[in-house]
Image 1 (cartoon, rainbow, N blue to C red):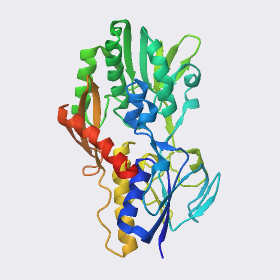
Image 2: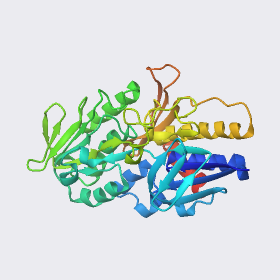
Image 3: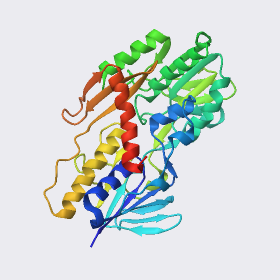
Image 4: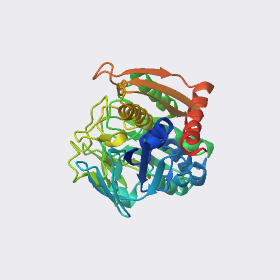
Length: 378
């Protein structure tokens, strides 16, 4: 008899988990992968869409193209979850399984920042990136603020990358001298666990005249004055606001009893929740690593290997080690790399910074291409 697995969310975590279970277990497993979207888009591809270097159609990987054996994709919206019974209800069906994995990611709460919907823009969603693709060409002068609205957010390098890419975009148009760029972030440095990487980013900011406003969040946007009010009351005038919205766990989890302090706590090694047979991976958890696809993917791979061992009656392999790597766009087609180990020395992450080169740029390109091929055959 096969083991039934429900995976909620088809991002990095859900796609890698489903693929690995299929590869290793074949007909020993029956996976149902559920997501409300019809396509997967890499986070870094949203910047390509935003700055007009690629079209949305070019970066969309359609779930309809998934051909992974023993994995059924369902484009449905999850409406309730019972973690005790491992029972899931969607807008179209109901499901029960031997194993339930929550990989729903983080949602964006635009309403949590008054004025953001009315007079600001956000670039973390596909829809937001598409809007900005049309807005940016008409922006010619004034102040542009890249502003973080919440205490934590996906992909910590993204605000800095956006500011540097905006700088390059404006230089190509010959209007950089007419624009002031500010980055507002709730940290003392761009990437808190990584001092060397942060220094490299701040050096690029200094070279290109980008102002860094540390240890502050954007609390509200004033539609009448076009000012961003920070959490300490400071008011910053702007002509273009590029926001990183407040993040929150999907609302469907509110009534499940799974959340603590807004996110799902899991065993750091096994990714298990307090509910038997229920696991969680990726941005929806408080596992202790950043909310980023590389960590979700790595956690999913570890969880898959542990489930495979359980199904086969084997000894469990090592747990999630909290390590990962990501690539950082520094503008001017430069791509650096950062490797991080969060668990070896709790509270003091170990980081390694690799200077930009043709090698690191090629690594980033291969990262996206290899996942597209692995998950979608693209």
